Image 1 (cartoon, one colour):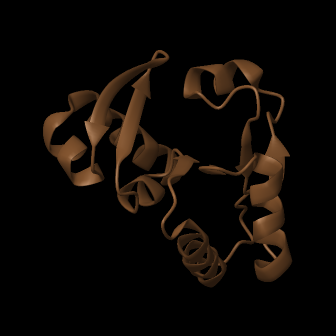
Image 2 (image 1 turned 30 degrees about the vertical axis):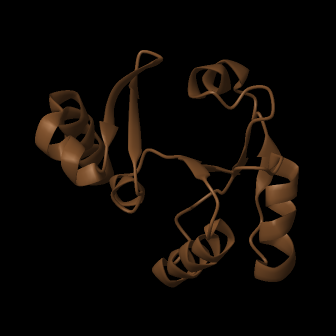
Image 3 (image 1 turned 180 degrees about the horizontal axis):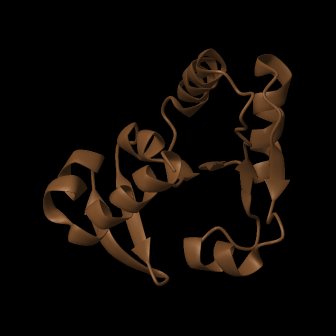
Length: 129
């Protein structure tokens, strides 16, 4: 999951997560400059949080609470693909082929965007495969 806080460079955001919260993040382009160009995060990139098989649900809840505390009164850009992460966002900007295909809350997009619903169906099938 890639995260940016408005007004902070990715390296600063990584430091904000590391010091008080002990959340390790990697700042930068992550070997994907073309992806960042499409996402609008080039040339600085994002802070990437890696979630693995050993990451517990409690650790994710703690990280989400800590991110909410940091994000208070700020604009936060999260680059995500997991349906649960998308559902927790105030606004989703759904990209397709490098362009904005739909905008709204997760619930709004489920109701109005066939492409978004199709993406979620594919994501769910991959999770349960």
